[in-house]
Image 1: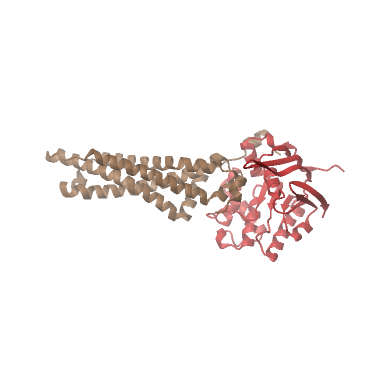
Image 2: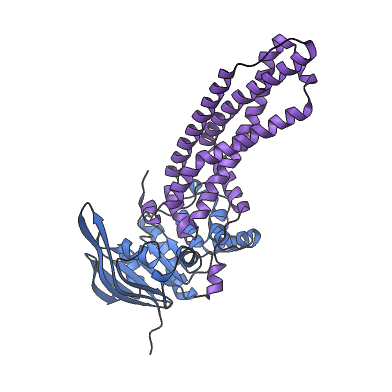
Length: 204
Length: 230
């Protein structure tokens, strides 16, 4: 058996390894990933559509001197939608953990540490958050434009400061990734804590 | 002649608490397994075979007693060192193959090399060689669902060999296979043991497997009933 130093440098699993495996899981289990991504995309679409409408109204108000604004209660609705989406992702990821009980046990037999299992699930969550957030933002801009456009005229999109638009995009995608990761923390922790002995005996 | 043992079990016991009752899955096992030996563990279900495997593989901790792998008391190892042991020293083969469904044969075999920190290209190259050596050179990019049971077990054997372990633990490796496929798998394992010098410990009901082994350990109710020469 190798020396202490050998044992210390023995096991590894990089973010790149985790990403590769995470992508494989998303590709091969597209249905579940699609549901997660749709859930986050809808919530983000709701949020960014509201933010866009607000932005369009502000630009329009400045240009035309009219006074249009988004109601505060609508932001509360967005808040609720985001919470619902987080709960939905947690649920879907818990199911993913159950589906993979045995595979997680096997990976532990092959030398995976608890931290590696957490990383694998978090990477998946981040990929899903990224895609869901980007799709959601695009949907949000479109619906925001549709809802504001009839009041302000559709050429409003050309008058919006590009920096604001980019800022909103980055914000939406970052929020989406953050929420997806937070929602996955508990399922990932559950997966990592799995006793490999029980996991290998598990029949779904 | 001195006996060069690679696995040593000393008064090994594992009790489970089942709703107030203590179940003695293992109760006082003493056993030495030599380097390069092929040992079959035989006994009715519930006799403690799987518990024994889990303890030897560092997957579970004993209630009492010690497990030495290469002279090292594995109860003294922390989680990281145990992971290292599982990764580099021990290869597992399961009754249900336990391949990762989203990965193809090549990637499945290369997975342990990822945990061992081997560069990806090198790991894949090694995986290809191993798959060729188990007769699956033509099936590298098939996923587990596209392989027969026997082929899946071959992939699992190749995976168990990925980090050049010194010990192979096989839990009913032929339990889910038909007679002919089972025989092929036994021949494969036997060859690894005899030609590769790997220590092979197999829990089994399979008479053919038992016959091929150097020693047979009969277990009953968490104890060793008798040990026979094969």
